[in-house]
Length: 394
Ligand code: LMR
Image (spheres, helix red, strand yellow):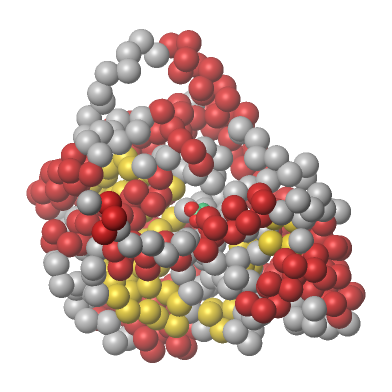
């Protein structure tokens, strides 16, 4: 049977990881996959995570199943972190999922149950796996303009023009903060116009929040999502704990399905539970329990917030350093956008050939669409990257 299988397209982020690993050069620089690295190039376990895990190992008395939706305390803690008191709790259905990707997948599966013909709109560009999952599920897909190649900011007019043609019931995938791969984000005023456009069209938002706390701060990064949540009778929010808790391999995420009222939320919850059962039965618990332990313990939470803030500010410092170095080396301010972008990534805005040349000539690895993981830099590698960009005439 397996002889009938066809080769599948490689994920460009994950295949870059392999190419990087295989490169024997000792001075190579990895700006590929979105994993936070400290100044020594390590991805440490956060202090609060270590402590929460220590407590779990000491105190956990059973590994018995929890429930199809996961631990309700995890949902409560995550809803509070992301939405605070934006909505009454009884309008929100939620399931724990294997990471943010699991939440996106389950959201799209729910759309298929509710409205099989719905078109899914994805920003151009977006995280490549968004389109890949939509294609795999054979859902109609359209793209909306997002990135202005000239300014490296949001192509806001293009975005509004494209989303202005969405049909009622279309699902629009939005990045709640820290857009991946560009690093360019709408202002809050622009978010209000996006919301008004989607309301006008009767579209349903699906908000992907994978980097809360990596942009302007935990609260600040939730603002757009809160405004969206307050504005629609139905929407979905897929949130990841991979990055802000640094628990990538634990696969910890949540899908929230926001319903028009409590009765609809009960129905939505039953459908989400059903989808978990069909796809993997019970969601992973360890990471979710670590997150709940941290968010509900004031001391652990304060320590986590402090470490997250340090992570965020170190990425901002690297952004400013890189923009400054590029200004000096090119005598030009055209790279200032790097300091304005937020989150882990910035899209440099150059050709695949030049990205290939940076890799071949300097051992600098970025995704072929010129997305750089800013957290892959440090004070030593920033000037090396700046010089290589200047030399490559980007
Ligand atoms: C990324 O965009 O690099 C991360 O979200 C990791 C991944 O799974 O692609």
